[in-house]
Image 1 (cartoon, rainbow, N blue to C red):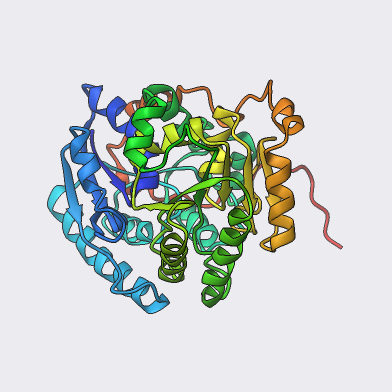
Image 2 (tube, one colour):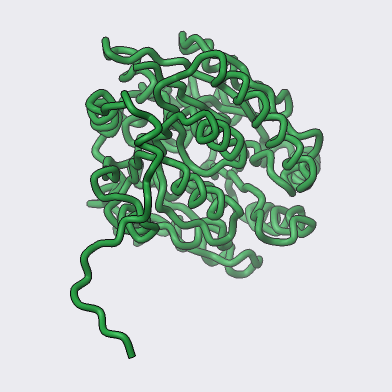
Length: 394
């Protein structure tokens, strides 16, 4: 079984890496890993080098936007569609595996469908009301043949979209596998790697991405509000790069300005790498921003999370997450609650609902069992209507 597995940036690679290793071990699977999007961007840390450092053979596929405007993103998708069409024409994989909701995946999945190659989609059925990702994710669901949602609630969303139950498999979240399989850095090694002394004072880990369905011209104002609230605390803030979405450059510039003005309190890194990021989550005092990692992975560390705005609106949130609007008073109050002894005690028995660390094995077992000998038939999905009893008309 020849599988093309696509990673679009540092975030989904960290989740996919356990599955990459699991599939590579399988004798029936031949995996070709393709890196695109932010992996090839110098501004995003050129994280394809992290993939290579992990020992994985990887094929680059350039599709970076010239800028972070809507037109720039459209141009990148057009470039990617042409590039992935060439790739699929040359390599003819039996299956394409993708994760999540990045716009780069539109190019991947449109090319796969047009080349009659089935798609397996991980993390479908979720909701992120404040982001264009929501639209992208659900369109990928309709293009995909096989579905691997993290939770039963998300599987029900996929079923409501007419997908056949036999092709929807609840498997948990790959991020939990990564946490359990990645040896953590100790405080000294992490401090040297991140450029922030975790032993000196409590650290806030911050990741704030553009809210792509909002007016992205307000992005710098939003992130400045968050940084000002953090400046009023005793925290040192370690900040990771925003996504390369519309508004991302404005966020980056606001963060850089704040780091230059307060170098002893704020530190920006382009990429911590998977081990560094998970280690930072393990040792941080609080997490703040609007990253999905605060929703999916942070609970495994019982790390308090201040989730700002509605970018993650609709996702199922563990009890370590405090939702907060983007205004100074609300952010200060949420930080105070997150850092309180009472809140930490409330998380003493918290179990992450998103997985048990065996997701990669479940996915690989199912993929190995698939009959892909008639791909054209697999793409004839129809629209599944579950039995609903007798329906009367007025």
